Length: 221
Image (cartoon, rainbow, N blue to C red; front, side, top):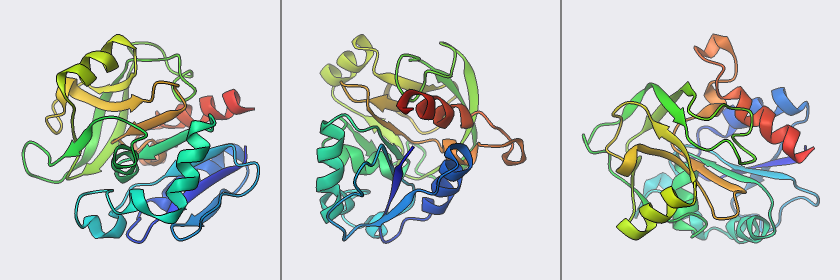
């Protein structure tokens, strides 16, 4: 799988994601700087990593969503290329209009950094096919602005269309409907606050994130 990891000033999980992708696919991803305007030819998967893009000035992800490379990411997503946004990457996806809703300040107003239990809600997507419906997995979080919110109509649509990929199985940040990750209407864009790239092997405390990338690799291949 030919993958690309987008790097913004302030990204701090780009290497984590790159290492996970290389370990699972056997191929180093291209590291694409935010000022670039094109993705490598034949890119089959795009990852937007966690961190604090542009220092989280204005709003988390707002400035990154308007960087030159995001035009190419949006075009690729609209063509059906799989895209994942993790933590700050999820914030960027909402700000870019690829996913609905917004990520607000955590309800407790604290930075949350710990392993959390997630319930797998949708197993029909490229990203979740390797999980069992209703399965509980363990994946770490590390965020201050992970409180997912959307208007009532959007939440109803996400629920009705099966676009909630992961739900918190415990209280974490106050997210509406305990939402931890959502899909776009085509199922090729996933935004999630937890970090599956930090749960690749048992030395991490959990390897439950590994199956997300393994399932994606199988689907793309």
